[in-house]
Image (cartoon, rainbow, N blue to C red; front, side, top):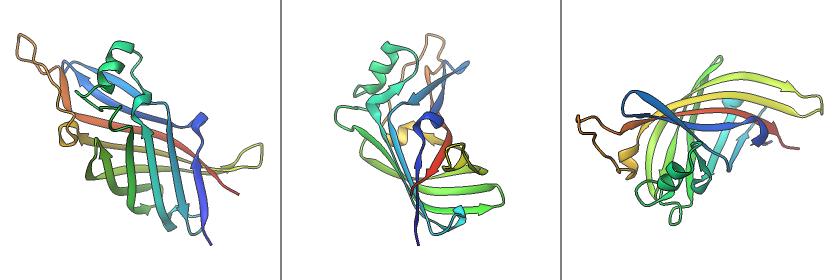
Length: 176
C-alpha cells in the first residue's frame, strides 16, 4: 500500500536566504512549486519517494529589479532552465529529527545535498484532511550550480555570498 502526500501551497513556504554585502540577509521565495511524497505507511520513516519542483521564474525577493536579475542568465536563467528540481534519495528519521539526502538540479546541474528535517507531527484538520508538518533547512554553494554572478565593492567586500541557506516550512496533505 502506498500513501501519497502533496504540499498544501497555502501553508507551505519555500525560501532561500543569502548574505548581501556580508552585513544583511536577503530572503527570497519560490511562489510556484510542487511537492509530492509517497510513503508505504503513515509513518514518514517509510518514505519511498520525494519529488520537488519549483518554477524558477516565480522567484520573489520583494524587489522587482532584483527578481528580474535573478531570472536572467547571471543567475537562474529562468527562460532556459524553467525548473529547479529536488529528488529525495534517502530519508532517515530519529524521533522528530531527520536527514534528507537527495539530488538538487539548478540550471541543468545536479549535485547531491543533505537537508535537516524537523518533523512537527500529523493532525486532522477541521475538514477531515490528514496533514503533516515539517521544517527543512540546508545550505548549498550557489557557484556549484553556475550561479556565479558577483561584484566586489570598492572596499573589497563581496556583494552576494556564495552560501545560500534553504529554509522551507512544509505542510503536506494526505491524498485520498
